[in-house]
Amino acid sequence: MIKKYSVLICIAISAILIVTATLLYPGGSLFDKNSTGFDWTKNFISNLFAAKAINGSENPSRIWALTGVVFHSVGFGLFFMNMSKKMPSRHASNVLKYVGIFIILFNFLITTPLHDPMITISSTLSLLGLFYVTVFILRTRLHLFKFFCIICLLIFYYTLFLYGSGNWVLLAIMQKVSFISLMLLILGLEYFTKLEDFNLIKS
Image (cartoon, rainbow, N blue to C red; front, top):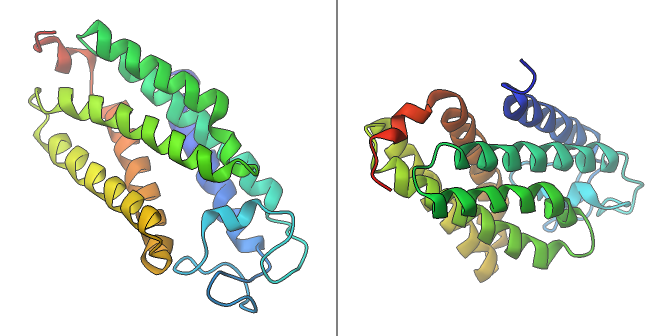
């Protein structure tokens, strides 16, 4: 039972821990160093990882956020590894398996001083895995998931574009939109697609 719902358990725990972290965050954002608490439209999730909040206070939210990222990484990694078992193509299966392994082993590094390069690497690998999943979903009869996969990819790409262009105002909002949409898509694909859905695809 635990193995069957491991992705759901990890993502649910991650969400609870990160929300708890936002409630404990003392304050300060890129736009207002003297603000109070965590503002979902102005703060970045990475603000929760520092030992001190932007306003200079000790940051009690840190341990909650760090633990949340660990569960998040394990959940997303397990998802890609599970999806690799549904792929009719050995190449696609191997790509998803190694994407999942990398995410589990190294994704937590986004909470360290290696944040910026790890965001680039982690995002690239996640996009690669999601792209492979989307290609094969488009070849099934799962029409609702076709739409969700494309929308999620577009949101992800747009969020990365904002990050690259330095549009911090919109990025602060889109970061959460991308995070939530990815989480919902992964849970949907994990628990509402079956091996049989992909068996009709020629590798």
